[in-house]
Image (cartoon, rainbow, N blue to C red; front, side):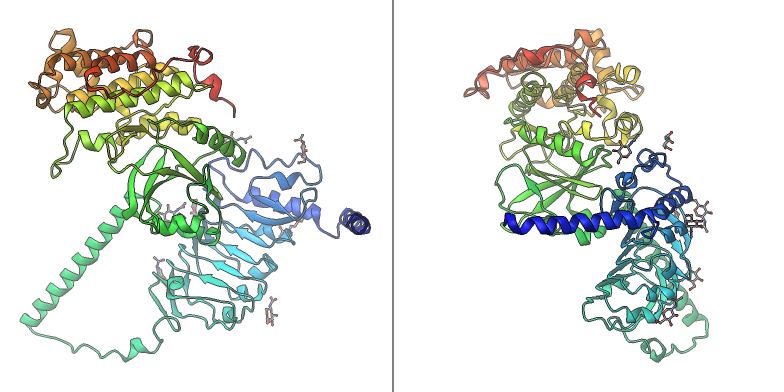
Amino acid sequence: MALNRKPATSVVCWLRFLLILLSSYGIYGTKTDVACLKQIYHSFKDPNGYLNVTWNFNNKTEGAICRFNGIECWHPDENRVLAIKLGDMGLLGQFPLGIQNCTSLTTLDLSGNGLNGSLPSDISKYIGFVTELDLSDNNFTGRIPELLANCSYLNDINLDYNHFSGQIPLNLGSLSRIKSFSVANNNLSGQVPHFTSPTIRISSDSYANNPGLCGEPLAPCGSQNKKPRLPYIAGGAAGGLTLIIVLTGIAFVYISKMKVIRRKQDDPEGNTWAKRMKRTKAVKVSMFENFVSKMSLDDLMKATNSFSNNNMIGSGRMGTMYKATMPDGTFLTVKRLQDSQKTEEQFLSEMKTLGSVKHQNLVPLLGYCMVKKERFLVYEHMVNGNLYDWLHPSEDETKRLEWPTRLKIAIGAAKGLAFMHHNCNPRILHRNISSKCILLNEEFDPKLSDFGLARLMNPIDTHLSTFVNGEFGDLGYVAPEYPKTLVATPKGDIYSFGVVLLELITGEKPTRVSNAPETFKGSLVEWVSLLSENNDLHYAIDKSLFDNGVDSELSQFIKVACKCVSPMPKERPTMFEVYQLLRAIGEKYHFTVDDEIMVPTETSDVDFPDELIVARD
Ligand SMILES: *[C@@H]1O[C@H](CO)[C@@H](O)[C@H](O)[C@H]1NC(C)=O
Ligand SMILES: *[C@@H]1O[C@H](CO)[C@@H](O)[C@H](O)[C@H]1NC(C)=O
Ligand SMILES: *[C@@H]1O[C@H](CO)[C@@H](O)[C@H](O)[C@H]1NC(C)=O
Ligand SMILES: *[C@@H]1O[C@H](CO)[C@@H](O)[C@H](O)[C@H]1NC(C)=O
Ligand SMILES: *[C@@H]1O[C@H](CO)[C@@H](O)[C@H](O)[C@H]1NC(C)=O
Ligand SMILES: *[C@@H]1O[C@H](CO)[C@@H](O)[C@H](O)[C@H]1NC(C)=O
Ligand SMILES: *[C@@H]1O[C@H](CO)[C@@H](O)[C@H](O)[C@H]1NC(C)=O
């Protein structure tokens, strides 16, 4: 082996030497690759700043462009671009003509941006050697250029979700290496090409949602003309009937459109992002334990029906959750993170930390998966959903939580949070406590979800969305000092937890109080504080809880809640204290009988702001 390797290595060395020699003479066009990227950069608007940090053209080192966000080179130390993958970056502009100078390019992915205008008619001059072309999910218009057929290396073409119009050039059928071709959701009409390549698999899905396409695999083209013509109807009665039919038709179209719009609002992107993952289905889901021996993204997609809206079980600042039904009938919860700005490395390191945090009152993180910019977290499924839905059921539901169950939930959740604050090193702040992130298993044992995820978000977005996305119900949970300091602290978590305790005992929502006089417009905390000042605190307690011999528990409980939501952070107890206080109230129920009593560990009990720990980026 060792003997064989030596000559081989020297051949490689010689080849590299030759390559470098050639490229320094400009034969390989590495200078033009830099010019190519420069021109692409200047032709795009990059409102999110995805490019401007890493795309630094002042670095003249060979291979510098290979570190640009979205750029892959043939070799990391050689300025020769292999792939341009700028999907989902919110870029604006037109098809980048500068790409002509990236002569070694084989993959072009500009999907999910806001590019518009038409494609150049002489497109084969620009991407003549490209094998994968993904322009889906943009605003391109005009015709699909005939000369796309001259890009003879093309394997995969995805033009879904644009505004292409006219006929698909029939000569595309001659592309000899084509494997996949999709133009769904455009404005195309006429006959579709007949592909002769033996490797292609094409179904009617590839052509879906275009106004007038025909030909194999769709209906044959002649058929529309052969339809019998409706006889011309004249006369009052018949005319009236037609009018009714037409009106009904319009109403029907209108209603279905409304439905589509509503659907889109649930998940503003539709599921186009899920469709785009088609080619990456083989990506493995990394599991922390051998809970499921092997799982791929494809399995997750099957289990969630391609992340369909029907499988959606919740949505919040951190992302959207989907219920996944595994082949053996068990359930998992898959969370798709909202636009995480962390690099793969940062994400992996956070996953390593979060995967190692285990406690009976935290929802176990089982695994995760990264695909392009998508991040998925796989959790154990909690059959009883979240606490919010139990405390505030909609009118047609009969959900009800008795006092002992509410107390058990409060104690367990306090224990989980106290563990994060006092027994993890470094301390973990939750930063997003609400009754929606307290999940319940079949025994109504509470488990905190979403812990540690705030770190994965773009810090600016997290702060802003606290105020902007009030609709997610987070607004009523934010400590009063936070908008001024924008620093997350343990005391901020305790305030939010206090609001959850108030929800538990009053049965009211954090932002809207149904039991208060109509003239009262404040939040739950403001209402309770007002009652407390007037020594009327008992008015706040959920009436259905009284008269079961638990009145003294109720009044002790609401006092603990009030302490947690003190306007001054210093007056709020620590999480360890909250847990001990609640445990004492619930002593007679023996919820914690077989528990070791929790003791704060010394190292993490220092009360410094979380940003010092978190600001690693
Ligand atoms: C990058 O873009 C962002 C967003 O437009 C902008 O705020 C920032 O100043 C830009 N940075 C540089 C170095 O151009
Ligand atoms: C230039 O790029 C090289 C290769 O990517 C990198 O090692 C070096 O640190 C960069 N220099 C500067 C000044 O950014
Ligand atoms: C390619 O790069 C050269 C400079 O190296 C430039 O003059 C030329 O215009 C570029 N071609 C295109 C199509 O942008
Ligand atoms: C794309 O076009 C649609 C209308 O056709 C428009 O509503 C949307 O804002 C456009 N997107 C971008 C990013 O320009
Ligand atoms: C393309 O989109 C930009 C905004 O991103 C808009 O100003 C421009 O008018 C659009 N051009 C066409 C041809 O639609
Ligand atoms: C495109 O391909 C056809 C057939 O191979 C050829 O005749 C034509 O010259 C090509 N056009 C260009 C612009 O390369
Ligand atoms: C669809 O294409 C036709 C021409 O084929 C054009 O008249 C119409 O305006 C297009 N519709 C849209 C929404 O772009």
